[in-house]
Length: 44
Image 1 (cartoon, rainbow, N blue to C red):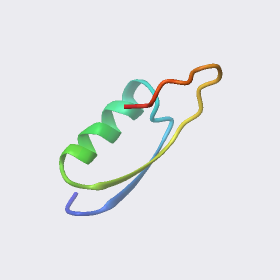
Image 2: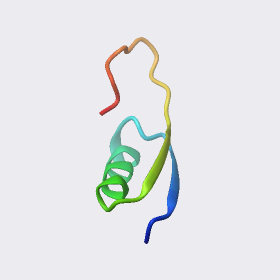
Image 3: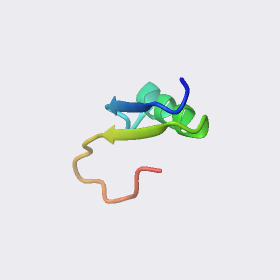
């Protein structure tokens, strides 16, 4: 991807998180969507 915007759902854990991080590290804009019940720590 070249300077694109990616919308990643389920990006709190697992493959969604790894995908979001990889796209962000490549310089893309990343919009994340996640929900974790009972957890107050930051996502990244």
